[in-house]
Image (cartoon, rainbow, N blue to C red):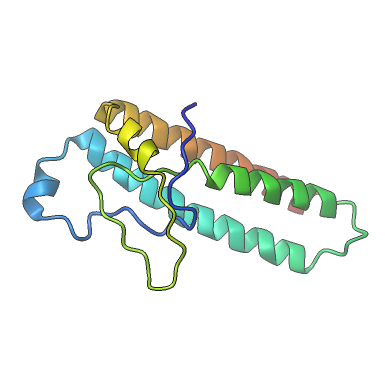
Length: 141
């Protein structure tokens, strides 16, 4: 898997700020890449909140605590795989961390729209695995 770092807070990349003409000129794969990325960011935020809530109600001595800690570490690693789709704009809120690896974005520009979509689907699939693992930990309590 191609793993590139872009915005760590995952609150960017959208059609917002794009002209209708620019959007209409995007391929279906490019549009699906952007949609998948946006969905993945939303799911990632929901997962992180759910994980934090689980931490809040889990005692340090609970056998699931180290599993949650490991899952949190895996989430941090996963979050660094989110990459800005070339040609999209950032829409960070004021005060949000904004770290871009412009070299990574340049490498992504060499990928076809189909390859970008495959990458976004793979990133989302990894998150789904983390989500399943959290559900498993919760159900085994």
